[in-house]
Image (cartoon, rainbow, N blue to C red; front, side, top):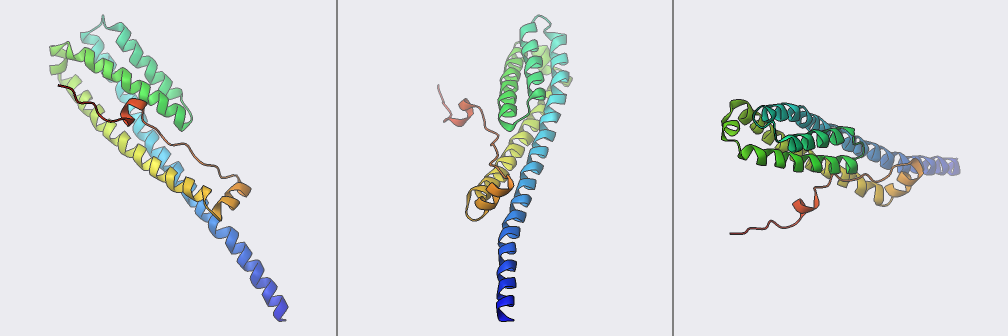
Length: 183
């Protein structure tokens, strides 16, 4: 009877040694997916604001066609991107195009003073802050998940069950370096 109890106990321990890390990986993967979904909500909000902003600028600065087309094209690329890396690259391109749009707006005092433009600019600024927070939340979830996937004993279970490391949502190169201050 004792050998049977010992065998059952060993089997139960082996099952638990597999189930507990596996369930932890599933929870962490779910956290990453949730964080990505929250990031996409904020990116969609940004994408929805861009056409209104472009239309407002177009009314004042119709001859700034190249800048407006660059923003529209960057938005289209961002909407079509799939993976976090592609999405990050496309969103960084959209950020650059929006900077160009705001530079154009600086040349038009009536536009800058316009209520619609000011409200859209404030809304976009708030959305950019939300995106930064969502990106940080996503990257934190990816860090936790990737650490779990790569550490013992969960890495063995991850390899057997198809869990793979996820990509971070990275900032463009110029945002990663030190800030340059010049007078």
